[in-house]
Amino acid sequence: MVTRHSYDQDLELLRQSLLNMGNAVADAIDGAVIALAQQDNELARKVMENDDDVDRMEIEIEDKCMVLIARQQPIARDLRVIGTGLKITTDLERMGDHAYDIAKIALSLSDQPLIKPLVDIPRMARMAQKMLKDSLEAYITLDIGLAEQVCINDDEVDNIYSQVFRELLTYMMEDPKTITQATQLIFVARYLERIADHATNIAEWTIYLVTGQRLRKN
Amino acid sequence: MVTRHSYDQDLELLRQSLLNMGNAVADAIDGAVIALAQQDNELARKVMENDDDVDRMEIEIEDKCMVLIARQQPIARDLRVIGTGLKITTDLERMGDHAYDIAKIALSLSDQPLIKPLVDIPRMARMAQKMLKDSLEAYITLDIGLAEQVCINDDEVDNIYSQVFRELLTYMMEDPKTITQATQLIFVARYLERIADHATNIAEWTIYLVTGQRLRKN
Image (spheres, each protein chain N blue to C red):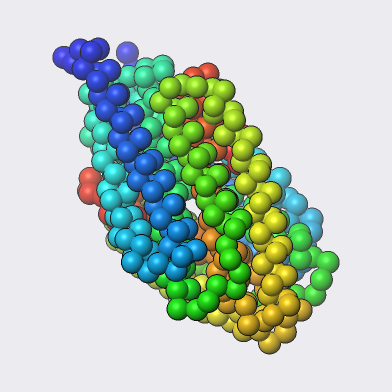
């Protein structure tokens, strides 16, 4: 027989694991975009290697959720904590994959001058990272207001993405030599836009956790 | 008290719901790529509208999984059926989103001649669709061999993606007027490659369901 006290401890551990995974993913996003902007191969490789840790964390959290469900037979909000934990870990893992993809592009572009100094892409990365941290903070503290703010911020990231996309198309049209690199930078912007979408998913899971109401996915 | 018999019926209903959702997603992939190749606006719009149904199915399946866990307190393989159900519905929903994205691109390109007849993109779509159907078939029938085949087929889709990507870059370099459209077609190819990745995830979930062993995610 497992006591309520030890169960609360298990849920606390689950939350802590999600936070650790989120921090690892935030570091990966940061590292990948710095590696890209500063053409730092070593950092790019480190980000790619660390993605294995993120994948391992996902599996550990999923296993933890399964064990909790089997042992505790939770209902109502306790069950939603675990159900959303399973969903959030998927979002985090996908964000980690996108950071990996950005680091891979950084590596492929490191032997050529960048067609332009990167300004908007690092800005998108900072915003996406903040959305990730805020969404997890909202999840842990059950802060609906903060979760709603994350959803609102997503529109701004979408706008910067559209702007970066158009700008890079213009570069390609004006100078076909930039095509290969500009295409890769469009992908980077797209991955950051997707990372922000996943942070928004986490915010929406938080709203579901607290209210029991599902929102439309983006 | 719920009997084992009614529980088996519930699990059967869950499997059926996943299959229905998978069929809706397969139709969306098919429709989106036909809309693109034949510049069929009406079909593109229909695919985009139908994505709401797919999103609704995801929520229904997740709710069903939560209710099953709460009511049945499953363990071992029964719990894995539900846990993998929760994961697979996320993969299906993402595939549906990618079909939506392709339909949106189809709509945006419908007022201009295509820069080339589309051959490899429809081929990728057929392969990804087959991988999706096979992965769900494997999940329902617990067919590990079929699941492994899906994982193998993913390499072929990756190869076609690389080839399409290089070909479209060449188009852009040879004729800058093709840049906007070719960039969109690169995204289409990328979405199809991602759809195949999600089918591979479903195959890997099937292997986990049967063996209890997790594979490395792609």
